[in-house]
Image (cartoon, rainbow, N blue to C red):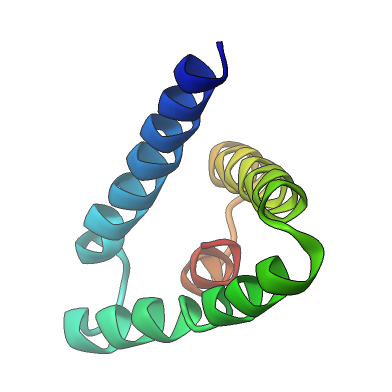
Length: 95
């Protein structure tokens, strides 16, 4: 059962990651600047790697998946119902 859940978590996180990364071309502004900002937004991952060494992998994985799920739902809701000019900044922050 744990193996099946692990595969599901990996699939969902990979799907979210690639879905957001491939959408960078649809953002307003320069494509190269957008890619650089998206890459810089991934730097906090190293903090979670260090955090997992001190608190354990299970707690860190659960917290990161929860934060990611909340961010994706919030981004989808804001994109559907709000007409914001700062969607690009919101997209980068929530990634």
